[in-house]
Length: 141
Image (cartoon, rainbow, N blue to C red; front, side, top):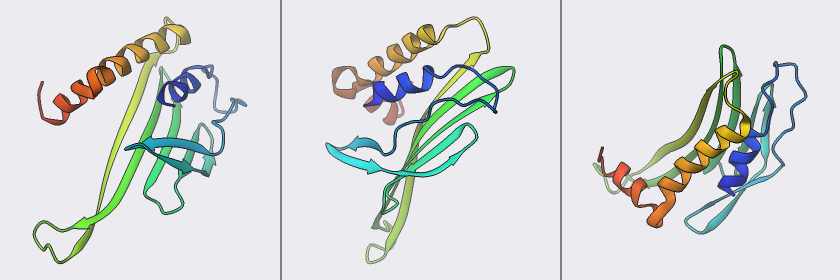
């Protein structure tokens, strides 16, 4: 799924805001902890789209910004209710997000070359059952 989303991002040509670029399919599915989360489209704008789970627990955002450089972002937001560590008898809402930003010059790299770099990073992060992500979350540098 993740590699397909990345392929969808980089397959879009750098076009002005008035372009008729293809959109991500509706709905999108993101698998978290072996559970598929179905996210129907909840917003569609110029160079942006949002997909949100019916209970609001997950939101996938895709956006593109054009200027001297092209910046493409895909972001997954997660929210949950859990015990407040300072008041264990009280629940609190917590949120987190993770995203991938592709910042590239308008010319000099083809979409295929950009995808190769993204594939390299995602393979690095997910190799050995995500050991590099675990190191990152542990504060290693």
